Length: 133
Image (cartoon, rainbow, N blue to C red; front, side, top):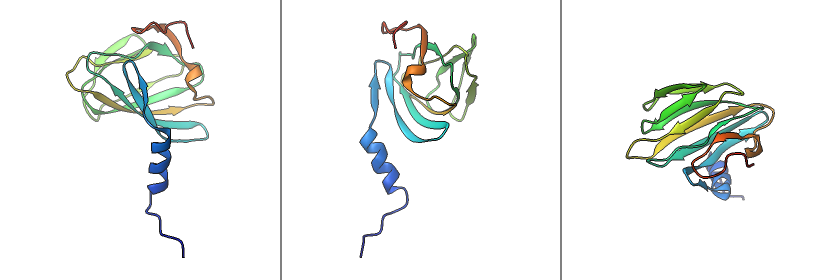
């Protein structure tokens, strides 16, 4: 008889296999994905920020779960606390900055026909990646 698998154990194993993808600003892990959506957990290190970027094929929704990041969307700057949310429309220039002393953790839900990293257009980047794919 086959051993019983606890609910969620397979998805945790899949996440562990994909792992945390490190970036100069912190990194992310993919929590779930399917047709037209992807869910990521982003971690932005203190004193760092992601590229000022936009996407041609996807929109994003962010939920802050830890920290107090500064969020830029379409030129509007605001500070969010845990449970704060923001929508990033397709094509809008956006960035997450972490001026705090602790990591900022954001859950990102992407929606669109193309959800790969090649859909990032960078305008400005602290790590020399602007204009590169």
